[in-house]
Length: 436
Image 1 (tube, helix red, strand yellow):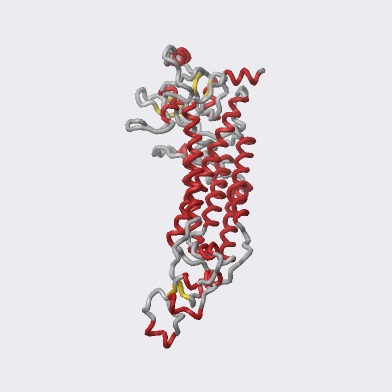
Image 2: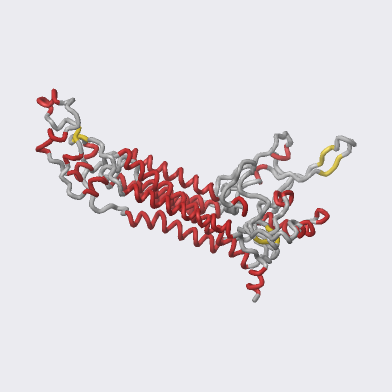
């Protein structure tokens, strides 16, 4: 009964907003099918030489990291970790004790949704780019000649150009570039795959999935190099000097300053020394963050030892995955050092699909809930609650924790009951307090 009452006090987001995020998943699925469709097209077959030792390595039948294992390590494993973290670690120890369970589960599901959306975006962009480049460049793999099984007795019929005919007497006809038509390989798929060396798909997929997971873990567990937030220039030694006394709490400098208008002194706000404004995370957390990176590095190494790719193919594929993982993470998540582990909130109702000229971004004062009928006062409830410039006291702690503890707050952000959005002056001061 208590849970049912909580649900009645929480407005559901508008259908327009929900549909826009469902369509985001549709776009990701479309991207995946586009990449898979590109993979069914025969790639460009770059001419090669039968005397090129760089493509004369043996064909390895059993790969160390097969395609199915790559899917498990780069897609399923990150997805499961994100699921566990979102359900077990959200909203965190700073949530208000009176936060209703329905609101907590809403935040859990939102963090899970954004975590999976980012993972999916990173993977499908890397997959589509890699598949397209493989077909466009058609670079031979290191084991191409082993795959090709060339007809060495009939080289002259497959020569690309006759530029070497004058040297044939001294060097032999094999010192020429030949077309893939010289190959006697009956398995067309194996032969086509021999011309997909650049860039490495295993590398791009492993980094796009596992580095995204590493960034996700760093965000949720605040694993980052300590940093100082920007501050205005000052020669005040209180910012850099050692504190005057030992303290078991956060040390501060209690200083007094001259009041320029009266010449008297007055108490100034305590200053936290810069050395106490950040600290290094425990070292074990680095292991937690770097395990996905180590797995991605190992996957890349197997592509070299299995003679599937040259070194440059591996590096470029890795760059693709690194780039898409960072892009996708920042698309859906706040910066690691400043975001307190949260994902960005949802788009506003009227900006769920597009934003025209003159609007700043995808968050507006209209809120996230369904549109109210014309008979309801547009902001009468808000004005009543904020009358006299007073805000609800409970919100002050929620701003710090990022989790609302009031039953009359709902929506992806801090939206009051009835779908009424906070006015701009109140919304800006509480922009960090989102319930999705």
